[in-house]
Image 1 (cartoon, one colour):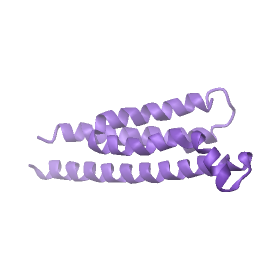
Image 2 (image 1 turned 180 degrees about the vertical axis):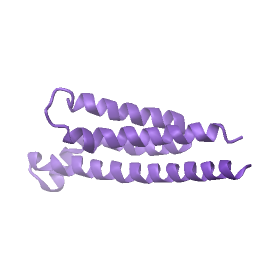
Image 3 (image 1 turned 120 degrees about the vertical axis):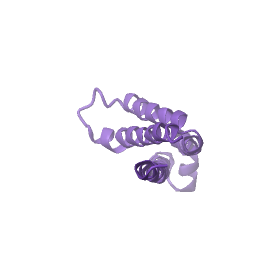
Image 4 (image 1 turned 135 degrees about the vertical axis):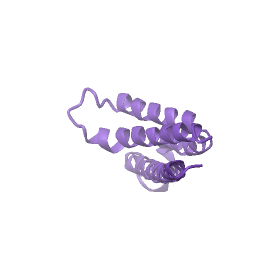
Length: 127
């Protein structure tokens, strides 16, 4: 393998590890936020957290996508990008005046999904 190809493969491995780490951190933080933020509506405390679990389930699915993206980068990357696009539709970012939610929730998911797709693309041509 030429020096340039080795460098590209090293960068693609780095992209995979960074994308996986960022996705792990992002999914845990969003899951905890969604779990605790609605707990007060149900009286707070442990009971409120248990009652609010259904609101946090989509973000638990995102945690499961970490494994899919690690094993099958193309499939996982596309699913994560679709998850980001779906979150834009679900949270109605297109009709609201606030773009803050887009930059906090949807954009990181779309960029991380694109990193996995990039890693698959580079890995496909390594041989």
